[in-house]
Length: 106
Length: 115
Image (cartoon, rainbow over all chains, first blue to last red; front, side):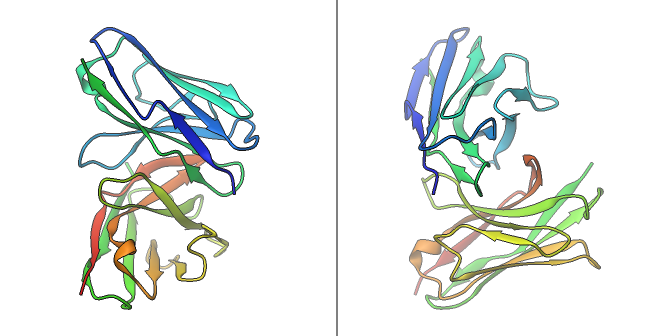
């Protein structure tokens, strides 16, 4: 099974900050990596797929990068609406989620 | 605009069978894989499995022995059954459409397994 490890598990940043979180796969998943945002009490929302493609309707301050085993999600200019937990998911070999990164406002 | 509507769930006693259905409205049903994901209270997301129109099914290896996912092309619905439930199956269960990744989600339904 492919294990996905996200870091940090939680972060606190100020409005307008650039925020980056990472996701590491236990073996290569090529570009088959998605990022989801989940706000409290809501279903997850797809942000990024194929490691770097922004889903339609997602604000351009979100971006994804990486391939193989190392990936990152960046929020360029943190907004209050971005408070959420962010999950990565590999889909190279069935599907596995990371444990999540919780983003809060300082 | 495609919408996923879930039904089922609620309170189960240990060893009972969990049964959920997800209806797909307003979009193509035959062109995609359809998936189930669950989230225990206060924890992260766990992929359960997925099915397509050809009834090709993929399961999470850790759940394979207890899970059945099926699809009904005549009603645009797909379903999840989990047998021999325990308290560890207590979670919010989501259905989702897979277009590369999970781009449309149901609202989630809570299942509690307790004696």
